[in-house]
Length: 358
Image 1 (spheres, rainbow, N blue to C red):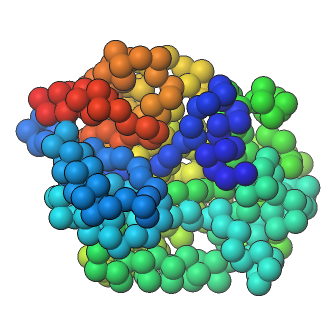
Image 2: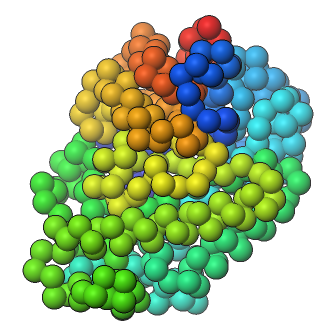
């Protein structure tokens, strides 16, 4: 089961999975956004069967409707160059800490739960959840080297980080029923990482043995320690992007509060060129208006560090009118643009063009 299948299983039958995207622009401030044209993004998994004519038609069409950038799930020089030729930024989307390719060579690099189970042997929720431990310098080196190789390609405009976090200690509430889990409290089998390296580094930094803490889920220093682990690696990757003079962006959880609570992700302290919160209102059983609330919270706590692009999950909307409302709520509350996840119809592109082109 891959990422899309995991999310699909937890939602209504036939719903596609969440797809992370976003963009790069100047600092966020209300005055500038009133004057500047918005930047909008879509996610694409390159279809190698596309002809050159298909690519030209598709990408010029996207550009005409206000799409300014694409996040490509896989590498395809032909697709990247075709997008760039149409005036669209071409960025590579990668999985960051959730990686399975090192299971045989470096099983010790994988995170351990509070129960002591390793993602290498016992992945939580689904089989593809194989989380690397961010405390380990060798993990940081592996990720920075991976990004360095990608950004060395002249047809790649930037890097887009997904799974830039710990495993979900709490799933979005809409997934609880499917997985028969009530996560009204933090359960030890989903709480990461308690490996030997994390324990030693935490004790060195805070003078405490995490195993001796009666309620580690309530320990503020233990939580802060894990925020810092993710921040440190992201900011090292950011340094690599800056060396290549290319953009770095990330798909993150919908609000700073939800991100910290659910996945130990403090994205307001990442060094990025833009962030795309996955504001999937249906996942949290919220109405369309919540999109505006989530954008407002993110913009407030970013304090202009970098722009926020509202990630809208198309399958969460009942009709095109709701899509329009979602875009309006996002823009009115400070979003610098929109990034769509899922199948984008011509009508939705028309709505995007009408709303962001104003």
